[in-house]
Image (tube, rainbow, N blue to C red):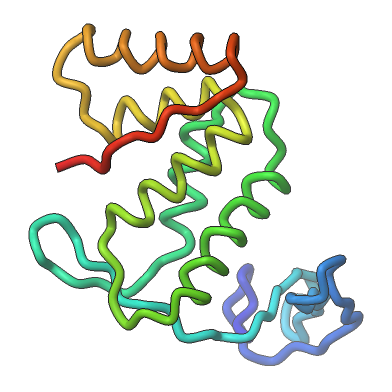
Length: 163
């Protein structure tokens, strides 16, 4: 493991612990060269599907893209980084459970929307406004009206996937 400070490859593990859910090992390390300490996380690499973009390109699934999108949507909202990480974990796990070799990016986008809808309504609307590329204020207002109706009635209207 390369030291993030001096980039030396020689270090030792000081402490190892499982995270609460037991899926990740947290390791505290100390660099032999600069003596600074740093933390690494180790997780089992599982086979994830290739993501098929709207234009037909294929790329490797990148969990960090999901975390980044969630962070942007939840910026300045009362949503913890732990909640964001757990949301990304659920989306990643759902993709693994599908067992598909390829998955359209729209499936991932809709999964993010469903999770954000449960997590924080404002973050959901933020993400939806970018993901669905609202063409005018009217489309945006309809989405907000649906949320308000849903809040009053306690039911959720199913949305069609974007074209």
